[in-house]
Length: 438
Image (cartoon, rainbow, N blue to C red; front, side, top):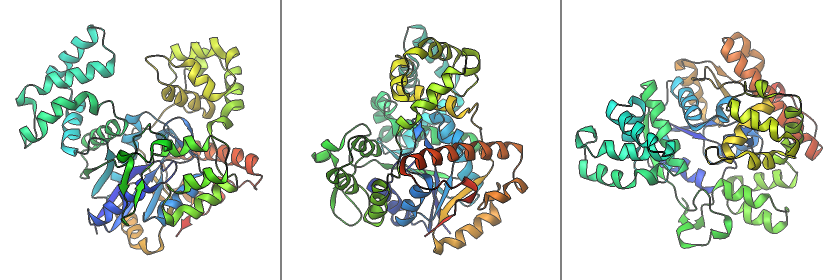
């Protein structure tokens, strides 16, 4: 049995995601694909566009065999904590052979080289880093320059193909470290390194649109790729799809967005849109105002990603804050991006204080019927509890696991309340949600 793991948000699931699953099965010859997926909130510090069970079903319809949920404090954490938590969960199953992730660079050896240095932080690298920081460089710029100087010494390179990997690596380190999926890929490699995991990393070069491109650019030559069926289609990024959905939802908008969703899940996705079954960050406006009016700088600084300085700025600006996105824009600086601020604000709303180093359980959101042999293998080999029924969780979890599950359950119940308020449907408690079996 060959199993490949994918770490994803699927916010929302689109053609590029199906391409990755198909690659795992056809090119890596995987019998099964296991997805560690963000729950109802995502790393950019906002609610997921669609509920986690809907996104899990879209993935299962498109070839994933098993979808597991990451705890909310992991799925909304920084890249390093996000990667470490997700990798630890896949590693803990003791059945996963590969970890497949997308990257702009598309060369896993280079990402592993960078990850190894960032984990071990050899003395020579640290001296270069200190030098560039002292010269006034920002941390990302100092890190890039320090890595370039470090790898100029060929004795510091551990790869097998010096000219084939090191030369392009030296020329592109800064570019690599400025691309979001490369950064996340390096964090995955760092996590594998730290865990001494047997999972083999494989990177798939991102196809189609760039992370920040909009759908208006989808028809350009660089954005068009062939999907597994041979059609020429633009692989829009998830952010481009979300951007389109911020406008008034018209038939034209729905048609344009649904064209980016694989055929197997398109009708299911469109149904969620038409039933108002999706959320945007605006639903957090009043919750944020309530939170900051009842907190002070000291109490705010107890939440994950909220520094003392940021907490003081939030309190000083709270009379000017009118909503979630507006607050993040108001508070951002050269050092703190809007996404980083959004994570801090979301952690304040959800009262999340820390992210775990390791995830001590795996919670099943759904699986394919024909993948039951995979579940049996996981239950037989897993080093962490596998939860299929939340009501039984207390019997299997330690105190850390219980806290993480309780925190995630509360956050998901809030998401459900906000969704029900929008679409008028009946509230279903997290413990009453059914597994998605496709």
